[in-house]
Image (tube, one colour):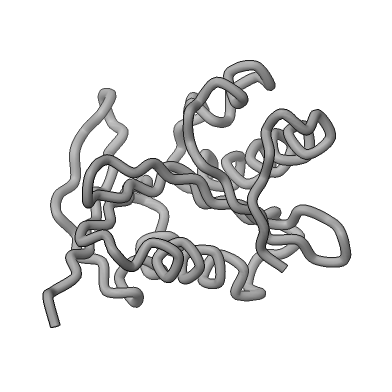
Length: 153
């Protein structure tokens, strides 16, 4: 089940923090960079991030989450995390689909991931996102930026 995460709920916020640390640790190993901001974030920083969060709950347990911001007609996915115990179950796909379906009126969707993160890149490509560019954000670390534009029907 997918539902909104209220970061003011202490238990949920703590669960989300633990989930994102477990998930981003896997990405950190893939891209060989361990200073990914959400990996170092504390509970107060998480609560102050001004992103909207949806969680994927399996058996009452938070097993995946997505966060996003909206600016005009543009939605930016900020985080998409799945607990390593729940990889390869389609959770990331369900969360991505939910965010897009819930925000059909928007025309541009953006997301970034580590250039050396093939699973994330494949997810975005198979969902119609196009690689815009790769940017070196710190020496030796490249981020791949993706965008999906809805065409008027």
